Length: 414
Image 1: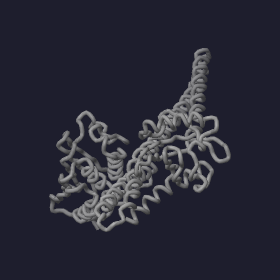
Image 2 (image 1 turned 90 degrees about the horizontal axis):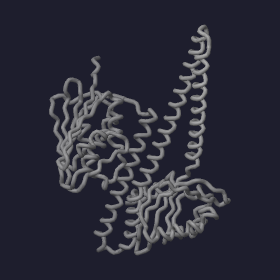
Image 3 (image 1 turned 90 degrees about the vertical axis):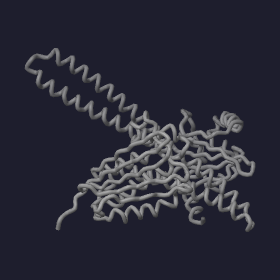
Image 4 (image 1 turned 30 degrees about the vertical axis):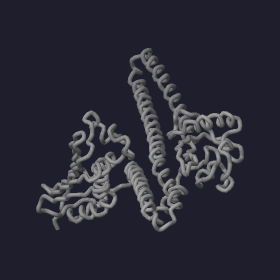
């Protein structure tokens, strides 16, 4: 339990997102270092402050009214929501922010967790995009003008002017591509922050609530109650770890940091090791049935990447199945190809949504109530592309799914 509490504490104190916990929606009772840094105070200075003091002076009365309305109908509010918000630092300077809210209660006392990010860079990026758009507009006008000039020029200059037009067209394409790339990167960053903020609220609220309740159970005969909340903390920490791993994996893949390092492995030994490691996080009553269907046992693949792929697939099979449901894994080596299938008897994927299954951040409508980032299968596909592998799946609603991966390899002859 000590390790789990340390992990929770580390998440709170080392988060790159500012976190403030307010009592009765106004009094600041907890502040992480990032929040103190954003507003230019020390953590001790902020404890006991009214949250309104962090709002620019001219907006405080309006903020008090908004806070009063929120207290009448507290609800989780994700980042963004098209609100133009600003924070006020200790020195009086203002900066643009996005704020996510997540209310909860402990011992009939109302609290709200505020997740805060500084969007100054994003605002600057938006201004830069406007400049690019204006520049693109001017380039288009220049091209139109040159096309008009070309029509009036004599025949002997046609080739030269055509070359100029071609160069300008290339410039236009490069600028358009740069603009699209900038927009795409900005959108990915926003989705990262929004998804992480949304998905972190529930486990963090669960952890804070359970830790508070555990402190009340001091008697020996209350061990069962303590165990219940300890298990809730472990589950929440496991979910946080899974999300962090997804974000880190995707970041490494996007940056091209991941390199394929094949080595000779024993398939059954590797899979049994993976099964042993993942079994403790399965739902109650779930178990894995594993079979190897060929005589060949050895192949040449990147063992770590293979583990990352199977952890994702097995974790999904567990997450999207009920308790006491088995998970079936089969492996074989056929014609220098490693073939592994993971089958569950879970909720399945609606047929009309299967086309989008490997899209980044995709979540099927029938499992929106189950926490997740929507990145797992996208990451699996990217890992397989590194190994020149493929993935296939079959799924039927309310009957389950089976995912099969194919990884080609070569065994060098010495």
